[in-house]
Structure formats: C-alpha cells, structure tokens
Image: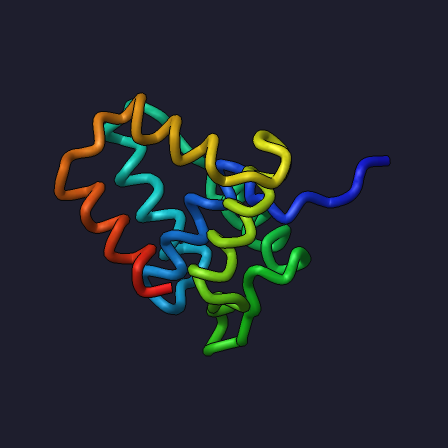
Length: 128
C-alpha cells in the first residue's frame, strides 16, 4: 500500500478553494457553487458526491466541521498557503528530485514570462 499523498485531488482542491474563499461553508453551499460553475462547462455534480468528498477532506484533516442549526458548517483546518506549499514541495520532489531550478527554467521558457514577471521574481528573490 502506498503512503497517503499530501497532494489534493483535482476535486478536493476545487472544494477546498471554495471553502477557503468563503471561510466557512455547508455541503449545500459548496454543491450550489459547483453546480453553477459546472453548468457553464456542461458537467454535473451530485450532492452526495460533494458530501462524500467533504467527509474525506475532514478525515484527511483539511476541513473541520461544526454543527450549526441542522447543517454542518465546514471550515478550513489548514491555511491555503500551507496546503498549496506542501503540494508544490511534493511536486518538486516527485518530478524534479527536490530541485526547483528545473521547474523555474521550464516556467520561464514555456510560459513566456514577461519582463515584469521576471523583475518581480528577482525582487522576491532579493528579499530572501
């Protein structure tokens, strides 16, 4: 059995982004937002799928829930920056053997970073 990944699946990340953006959300809140977004893409989502995914995120300790009236209100258990940072570190370790330089070279070469983007990166680098 392989170890549990700290990286969120695409669906889990989509749900987490909604909860981070709203700071707290019920399953119904997340379901309605996903339903609206997916209408534009001609995709559907089931309420029970959202509920299951949020329970999984709670088990993985990305969400915590409080009972409010009759619905559970989910809140992020970890800050967005912490989770995204862990995902990036895992990606760099897995794909680039822990070295971020090849990733940066790829981004610069393949994604046509503007002069302004490169200057901003240099400023950030200078602050560290």
